[in-house]
Amino acid sequence: MHVFKELSKTGLGPKLYGGDDNYRLEEFFEGRCPNSNEIKSNTILRRKLATHLSKIHSTRVEKLEKSPLMLQILEDGYMLTVFEEKASKDIFTLKEQQKLDEIMKLSGPNEVDLLLQVLPKN
Image (cartoon, rainbow, N blue to C red; front, side, top):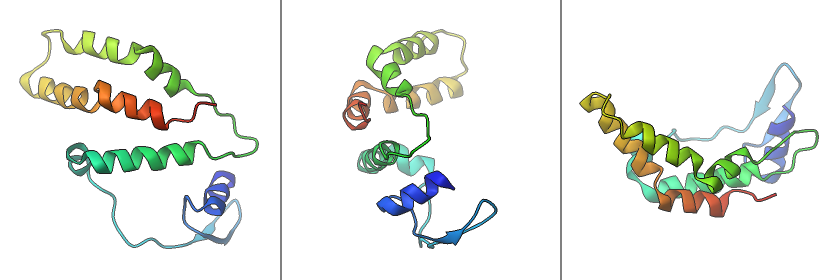
C-alpha cells in the first residue's frame, strides 16, 4: 500500500481514494493491457513503456530498499553475452530457436542502449 500511495501522489498510478492494509479504493482506468505481440512489434510502445517504468522505478519511496542490479547487469553486458552463448548452442528445436531469436531482437544493442538511458543512475 505504501508504494501505491507514492505512485498515486506523483501521478504515476491511479488516484487513491482511501483504504488500509486490507483494501484500497482507487481510480478506474478504461483500457486494456497490450498483448505480447503488440509490445514485440511496436518499438514506440516498447520505448514508452520503458520510459514510464523508469519513472516508476526512480520514484523515491521511504523505507524501500532499491539497488540498481538491472543497471549493473546491462552495463557489464554479462546477460547478453551469456544469453548469446547459450542460444547459439545447437540443442534447441526450431520452435525454441525462433523464440530465442525473438528475445535476441528485443535484447539487442539498441534496446540495451535505450534502457541504459532511461534507467535511474542513483
